[in-house]
Amino acid sequence: MGVDESSGVRRRAIMDSVSTQLDELKQVVTSRIDAIADTLCDVSRRIHANPETAFGEHAAAEVLTGSATALGLSTVVGAYGLDTAFAVEFGAGPTTVALMSEYDALPELGHACGHNVIAAIGLGAALGLSMVGDRLPGVVRYLGTPAEEAGCGKELLARAGAFDGVDAAMMVHAASWDLKAVHSICLSQLDVTFHGVASHSGLTPEHGRNALDAAVLAHQAVGMLSKHLARGERVNGVITQGGETPSVIPAKASARYFLRAETAAALEALKTRVQGCVVGGAVAAGCTADVEWSQADYLNMRINTPLADAYESNAVTLGRSFTPYEAFPPAVTDAGNVSHRVPVLHSTIACAPGTVMIHEPDFVFWALSPEADRAVTDGAKALAMTALDFLCDSDLRARTKRAFTLSALAIADH
Image 1 (cartoon, helix red, strand yellow):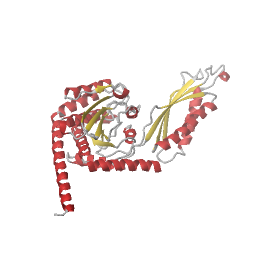
Image 2 (cartoon, one colour):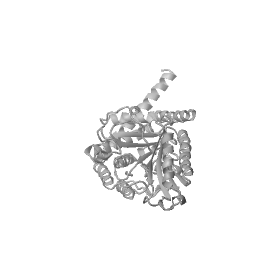
Image 3 (cartoon, helix red, strand yellow):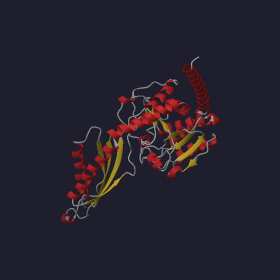
Image 4 (spheres, one colour):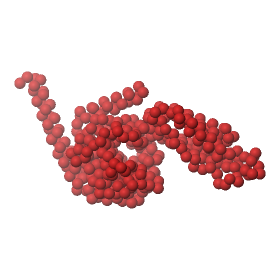
């Protein structure tokens, strides 16, 4: 036997051994998730029953951390400077995977985005992986990530070091389709307060400076700007305050705008143009404007195809059927911010029919349905198996790293 042939035989033997070990680990992990399926579904239902909005998810965090502790994972609450965030880390090795749970709800709509399902999926994957014990070939960092719907919580966590030393971050989002990846764009929020001078509108109008006029002029300017935006750019806004009575010229008015763009650079340029509109409206009305931008912008998703393919392959073994993600309009998620720092898996799992969209009132029902329970267990299994693939397969890690590097170069070229 030649040297090359002998080396090939050894490589195949090593690969076969790794594959066998990986299959065994996946069996242990998925069996564990099956054993705690009722608990995971109960966690999903309890969070669904008590919807809490961004940065106020105290009960949801308590449900998740309490369940984790009861099943062997002691978590740190208030992690990375956010009261409703939590973290736990286990395992040993040179590679670290972060698993993410979201659990905030929408104002008035409740869990119309299915974050209760997302939360239970992340918990289940972490608990399943913790059963592997010393055989886990790396570190798992399980993170509770608040304020996805508003506040860009993952960006705040990232700034505080939540993803330092992480080689890949992963989560699965509830949806109406099984998608291996999600295309998302950038978003920024602008709050403007216009200040004028109050006076009696009938007796002394010449003494007044109408803050509502400033808001209306600014809004019209933004509307005119919207006709000349590049493809993929959007500005949407509402006047949130405009005075109390027609007999008094309003001294104060306010408005809120969402700005969307495909890249961070395009978003920054758009922010400059919109700020010019609102300040110009204030000047034209003889008023002033206080401009407040969100503390963190949502960034576009850098899709990592090797991770997405690995997730799809694992989910297919559970009976899931996938739809091409390219056919869907872009979303907005703070997981995109994480994807600019480390490779990210952000897949979706169906728990509602395709006629029902997230953020619609009907999705609240489906987030509590038997289909949602199945999504919890399937999602936890597929997520955990993909984490194992990444930890065990050096080729997958190399391809993931290369895809991440290439996506960074593509953004720089753009």
